[in-house]
Image (cartoon, rainbow, N blue to C red):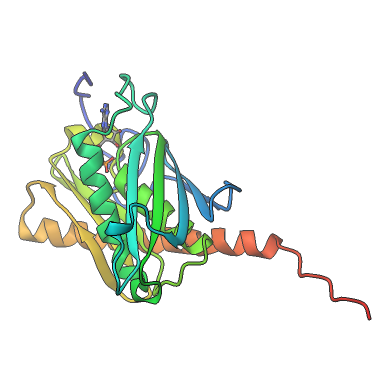
Length: 247
Ligand code: ADP
């Protein structure tokens, strides 16, 4: 059990991990790190460390789950037993099944599912280390893995949470703030289309606080979006242009 820390925000407005209220944790993104996957991405979001691997579009198995008019997206969010302080069972928990669904629903609007009828795309998300906000970091990495697999999309999906800690609305809660704080609002967003694809709320906020949390989370998403694009560019700039045949 986590012991309740004395103060989550000090008199100067600085949080336990040294951040200001509207400050993101450091985010690091990398694409194309798993050669066996069609597309892959790795994210470090604060102390969260998460891998995402995308496969497809490919034939659906079992076949009866395929759809005649569109591609089917399947997502599996899984936490490694060593990803949290106390060993977690490797079997899928109710929470992991729910998060898999939530992540799939936040990614679907970004994809042109109708381009590949009767096929399937699978995204496997492995949380290697968790420190609060893993659903958001997973969405950010999964969308990058889908882009790396070359799957046509309307926009990248990027996610970030905001919440309430000691009566103050703050950006990007880490584990202790998530558990001890009074509210958490994860938001997934497509910045180019200005469209929200996931909005959840855990806890209680006044309408004003809710509005502030959502706009703060969207601000965080916009910052991470730049890092997502940078990660894709970094991989594709490293690919040498093919030499022309000499004839
Ligand atoms: P999210 O990771 O999206 O914030 P939750 O709010 O459900 O999702 O979880 C908050 C945090 O609680 C996780 O990021 C993780 O650090 C921690 N956590 C989740 N499941 C477990 C578990 N089985 N044991 C210990 N800590 C856990």
